[in-house]
Length: 465
Image (tube, rainbow, N blue to C red; front, side, top):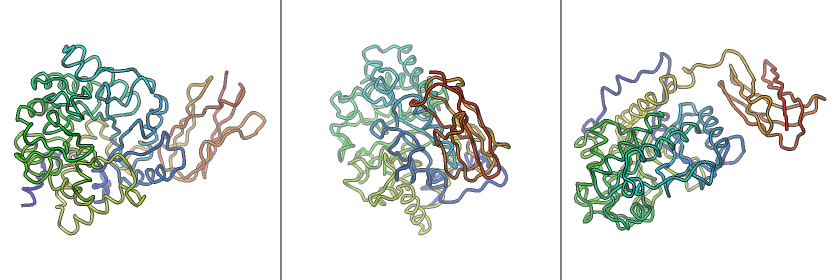
């Protein structure tokens, strides 16, 4: 019964191998199933939210993070790129770094933060309806994501525009077309261009949100009388072509598919229909688990247990604190671990999800990127360099640490006066970057000094304003 309810792909398990000596705990396996969001534009700052995130990352208790504009994660390209680098450097297991970049009204990268405005899916798929236009925009956006360390896009939207006034889809221009085959074509072109730049994609919102008359962000959303099997066509297309990396479940109730639970919590929809009937063997993710359709109808722990037992692999949360202001990741890991140990959640569900997630990370992030920190390639010598040099506004200092310990990175002028303290902290082995913007200092030569327990290295910095 356990194997029947949580099908473990033997081929996936055999295809993923850690290096000799690598170990992973049950808690870390569970952690890989959790995606959180946080408030802040840099890990260099000290806030409770960021300190919690750093700790969770260091212990491998988070599988990915989501960037949002309202969380102050996406200010400009330079800031985003640095933040992505900091997150990966602090993570015990490399992260899925994601955002919503559909285009139009659902585009976290746009004119307001240093990129360009983009067309809606409706404009591309219905008004223009040309392959080269859809490909061109997807390619452009994929380039933005790649250049800024974002490796996962919560797009494209495969919903069919059944109800043009649907508040979460049609009214926002998020559907390519009212014709399922046309949606399938544009979704395929979008995915293809993202893959060319090594960006993972997320096809959403299964089994189809386009006919809804209400918004699942706000509460219970019933598509029982408006949904038809035609809305599965775009999903069937990308699954048949084996181009779908991740499928996002909608919090959508359809009594003809499940008389009790919405799709995201339904074993019949997740496993019987998406896995078995359509043959999808990739990653299945929930829509945000704090949406009204879930929180108004299910308890916090109840929704987690139902989603995992339904066959979901990734749980998406747009925050990193729980209701008691504690680490959300640790709370979720603890709840899942308790339910595994009590037999409520079969451990085969966790093993299956972990294997699928790691295979996806291996495919897109590289073989070495899925090994735990103690099996990753580490620097042999301490180094310090910067670029550009000379510089006229800011420069990026990069340093490599061959061993963990206390470090200090300070800037001095030629008279030996300290002008800036960039780092004074405990750090793990690895490669780090930090930006220095000496806006109040005059042109001249400065010296960066990196001090560890056993070494001191220096780098000359030339500021030319």
